Image (cartoon, rainbow, N blue to C red; front, top):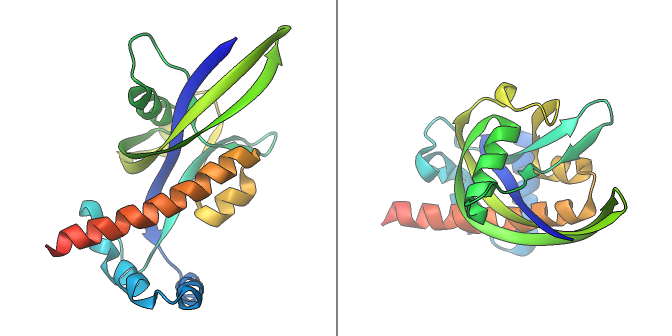
Length: 188
């Protein structure tokens, strides 16, 4: 049986510790793109109307989990009749995290199979990049017992499924490009 669902990677910009800033600068020095990172770090407070973020920020993502099992996953869920895949992603992410989100871009999909009640399911999950624009993680639904923010690389280590970690790192690349585009548009 075929099934599909949608969800995504929810991000926010949070204050960056000086050690994180030094590591980021070192990574970009290695890639010889120092000017781009300087602009990204020094101008991040003007991105997308985020005025309360200090001049140095790091990207964090929200994961949903079950603390009893130390299980962390990306938020996702199944469609209701008449919903587009984008509507499913936004609704499910908002329900599971308690956050209000804005859809930014499509990241990619993962496919896998599982058996439930002696029926083999082939499932495709489409993931989107979503920006947290409000809400509260304490207002999440009952499907998971916790929602927490993690720096991207920490989230990658905590995710239970490797295919979701791959989506997370694709989202990181997409987010960096999106932030640069936001900065360039802000300068025009």
